[in-house]
Image 1 (cartoon, rainbow, N blue to C red):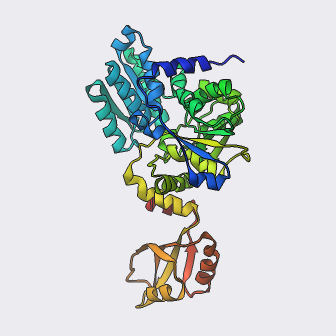
Image 2: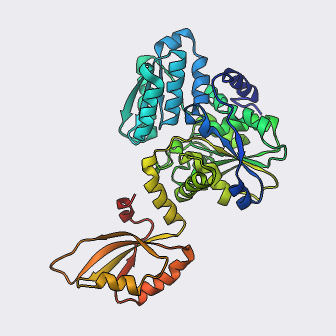
Image 3: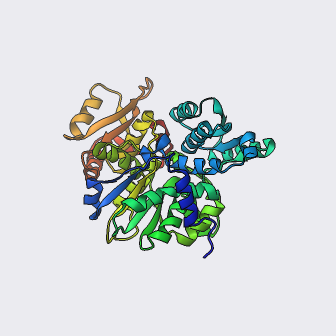
Length: 416
């Protein structure tokens, strides 16, 4: 089989990066090992230079430019981590770069890009998602004769990102059953799969996408890369609306499976990584280990490796992470409750409906002077998800008019 990127290409990229990137550790997770029933190891690319594997691909691509190409500068589009990798390479290689970012890119990542790239980098914010940002950046590169550094759909970038596998090959147990890798555009999994299938052919390669941006799964179903109608940008590091042409071909031919994980499960895993392993993972960084605990496509016969791809998380998002996790786990539910506008109505609700261990975590009520009843949005957190049945029974038996808010309601936009 002729592939656009080979294991030899990945080895060459690894040699280029030897004095640039860190040899990130492979750590055993006791928590995940107990849940899965096999040893689960975490490849800690969140500890990489710029706290993400993306620096590998960007530096590999840019280090191979001619003197004329370096003089003309580079252009990139990114939701954050690729931008940091490009900025790092610009500063280290003395190449001017213009980096286009979607307006949704967290402020923390923008500051990091500026710090890493210094005077070598200019940022341009684009009103739109990654795909629109990518289009604008590519047009800028054509108009100004600059080299466009693609975040994933480029042979040199794929080879550089695949260098994770070269390190991993020196670290993982001989009996490793599966390597689970987060998927956005597909650069990381393509490069790693190329090398692993050559050197560790018995290992299964499983890609993991978020439910709201499963562009590679959609491409595999359609037989070609297709644009998603909608992209949920919560897992921003992998929020790609269309898989790459080169990466799609590689994934189709050599990756064993792709699984899709709900954003709420990613949030739960982010919290567990922090509480149990002390790892501050960004949403994309928690994709693989979230899949390992609940969404494995097969029963493993040996150790698993999960790539923690990045740790550039904005701490201001943790309220949203907690909210999404609690709802996904069935611990938090919301109701529209119509209270009689009379003294003691709320006290009666607390005394007659709620029991020990059930907490009100949200209460939004506006009194209407000209009405006998007023609606309130009430959020209730349970100690156990199975207790929702008993709570619904008590609500139905009460004199109140209660409507449970469905998970797809627009009302939730007020909460996160």
